[in-house]
Image (cartoon, rainbow, N blue to C red):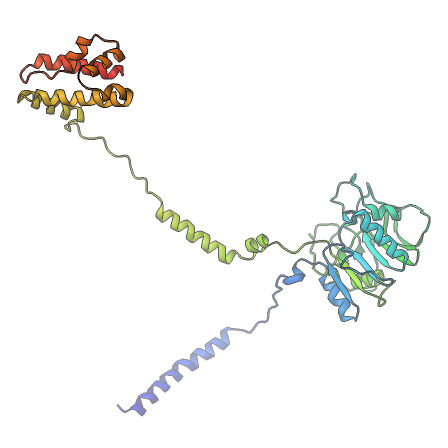
Length: 391
């Protein structure tokens, strides 16, 4: 078969298989477009005012975001706006007084009351106290906010309401509330303006979804809602377009350990499993209990006794005596090295004095018995063992 004919057959077979499979695939599958909402990345993952900052920048407004009030990095000027999303009670008294002085020169300050989760008896902070705002023992309650496309809309459902005391030098331009307390007030202080609201959830760009059974579930999704954008624009109106918008979101970026645990698990989980597997492989295996030795095996004592009887039977008494005598002298060198260093009668007298024995008895114990005198061997071994035990 020629090469040209072979390739022609291959092409025909591919066409016969490919065309039916292509038709079958096109008839049994349908193209579907699906949108996947990915979690926020970068600054958007920890800055709830990130969407507001980008919206202001798109509108030609200079906007800067900070995790906390830092006047050394925030050169406040008349016409600027400072938005405090976090609890104003965390602002130090010196910083609070500096902010109030800046408001007198023409600044615009936006702040909120403490959250409802905070202790009712906890101090509300220097800023609210200086403005005459009283929020202790007040609870949260929704306030109707009717707009053209959503007549049943409500706001401020998650914030603590408040009341206002009359203070010299502070004039109320507008207040909004009902019998449950105020949810918004605009104060005139010097040449500047202070806005106090009970809740700033609508300023956040991250959608918040609440339970459908929650009576306060009419809250929308932050700045994704048109009515929230209108309300935000109204709050920022006093100095809008005049200066810099300083957005203090009051949180910190995720820590390294947080990122490793929640975002790096595809790396550390396999490594952890590999480490556990290696430890399991290298660990000592604990098997079953060893069986007891068989009964016909002789013990060490039996072997020693048999060896001694063998030496005794073949007239090797001096070897047995010498072993016991060396054991006694070894202990003597450890317990009384001075006596062990002596020789002859001097050593005998030193041992007798040490043991408080008669000299003749010690001298008998240290004499080598005759080869065939078994009785004398046993007597001397007995004396040596007693002397060794007394040391």
